[in-house]
Image (cartoon, rainbow, N blue to C red; front, side, top):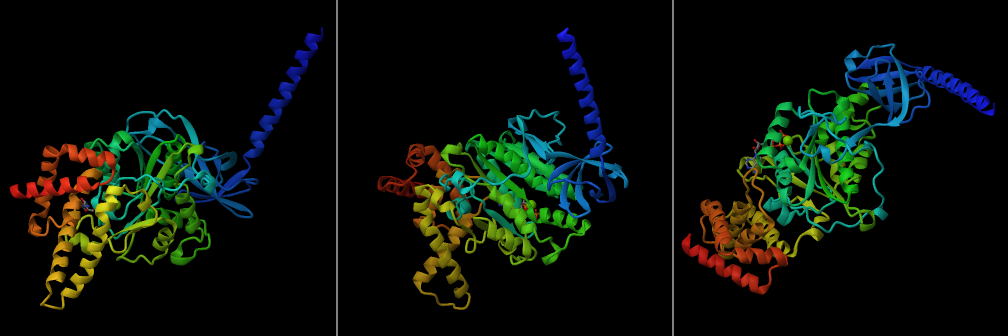
Length: 502
Ligand code: ATP
Ligand code: MG
């Protein structure tokens, strides 16, 4: 008897709840699209919507609220925006946008929403991470103390990058910015670093080329590509870096080391400017909305090195910025320069003079990476910076005088050889031990009597010789991470021996 009453009660309760939730669904579809342009919509009538909350249109397509005003909200459409019409109903979803993360993404090319772009089928996600996240606080962080080897002699020796650091790559069009990032990714093959390459507003053909290069050097097995192409909506281009960062954070939180490349943040700023102009937000310098600085600093702040208590993972960021005619005082370049821990400046003059990578060593810096450099590199590269600095000054000066004293001449000779030695072919990152013995040969003066035109050949054959005849010595350097007096003597002897055969 009492049982019956209970089930009756439950039944009536269920009915009541059903009624209530039906009413809820109806009531929540209260917004209306009032304007739509280029994937950006204005919605009226939606109340209680939070910044970055997801919304759903009546045809099931989703959007993201990014602009809140008194009577309307601005949202970007995540998907087919051409199907959305004025007058469509909209409701808030009470959740933030998130992207699928996990090991399943490794080796894949995805769009900023995690949809595969490589035709290799569905991806298994471990979990979902929010695109926007507050960066770890200082308490969770640890200072940078492990190098991130780029495999590029000029960078590892003079502008070293540490794991968890944010180093900007900046330069004009087509000076090798992307190439530096790609070579760094290739070099992580044996370094146990998961790489995320975020392509923003690039041509699809260029992405295909990058994927092919990474595959050729077996680098896709530790790499994820997140891409929003030039043909994609500004909304997707705007979201791409956050999606990449959320994916990178997954690996950092797992205690792993990850590297993220944002190629490039200039195009990201353009996409955001485009969205903001459609939304009629007040624009500031160079027509960018006032919060673009906040946007980029918030993004880059998420890269860091976590301390032991938080798993010890790291996320290193290599943002890329394109300048116009070398103007680094434009709005976006100055912003990002001030946010990052250093910059690698690339110059077209150097690039066209055949100095590639076209790094201007004089004005490139790494503010924290030095503490992460291994001792052996410091030992050989300490004098390298000095040699090059003196060389630059003297070379400029020497243009005006014909009779140079012997010392000056010698310094110029040395400097021009070091410049030659630091050139590096595309897609051929060099292990740190090889870098050390190569740079040692230069700074210790063993190249002074080698004609400049023969330096590159010398380098190749010298390395072959060392690997063949002195493998043990290379192993010692790798193990000790420094050059003891004994090692230095052995190195000198080996180079002298080799030079007899050159
Ligand atoms: P964009 O502004 O178009 O993005 P970018 O600055 O990223 O250009 P890359 O695409 O990396 O430049 O390189 C431009 C060209 O220079 C490419 O064709 C590349 O092959 C060549 N290049 C880059 N680095 C080197 C190098 N170290 N040695 C020889 N060629 C190089
Ligand atoms: Mg590029």
